Length: 323
Image (cartoon, rainbow, N blue to C red; front, side):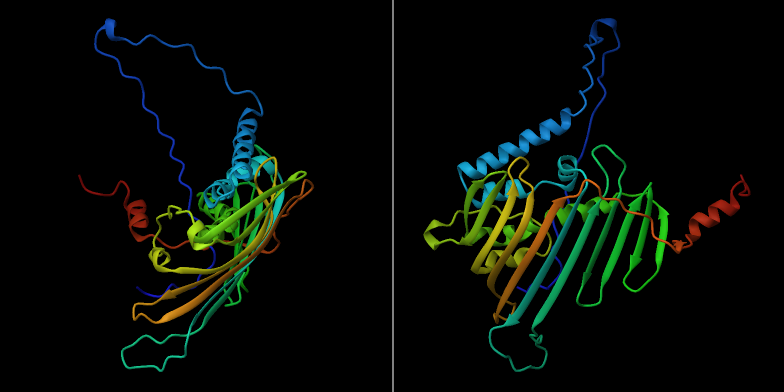
């Protein structure tokens, strides 16, 4: 089993598939289905109320039975739900990842060299749209390895900038940004999910918030938690969680996290059965910012487009081909 590589926290992309099929009748009038009365459109705010009810039910379940499963259910809300419940808000986190050999290993011919790895990933999200308003946000993410990006979406335009580069703009023609927003919102969920096989959860209501304390469970008190299937996660099945400590603050009404500090230590072996120790440490804050406004950057250039030769050929030869 290869040793796990170090990379920033990544959540699982949430796929929402809306499918519907038309009603089909027979060829004769007897088989024509009777039209049903059209349902009334949802009243304004009904979707938000439903989301709040579902979120509150999740928090109720966590308080009634604190466990990794009930906590993950609360933390697993998508950013689509979070922004509907919060409106304008900011979110920040710093995540540190390290992986090192237990003992120094003398390099051998044709054998991978074990090196200590460490990455610090920092993210900031500013969501500047209210419920049912067009998408408006600024997202910045960078690591201590001199890699980073900035993304801004305003008025159906996407502004992007790589680290130490200028801003470029293009029409917003895809929804890839939704995956980045979900990964930011689920950053705490993903670290808790890493700890879940050996996690003990305690939750207490404190006014408008819920305080969640995380610790390492005794071996006999651990509850199996189904692992989400995703490429590159096979190593987790053989990893041993050795340390867990952390505290979360959740909003009582929505279950959305407000503050988080989680540290998870683990041991794992590589394909040569050499022992490594790893640690993930995340700190984060999220808060409502009702007055938040963001402005388009200055000195912006159009995003260069790659020439697609087949498309260009068809465009130039349109109407000239022989019949």
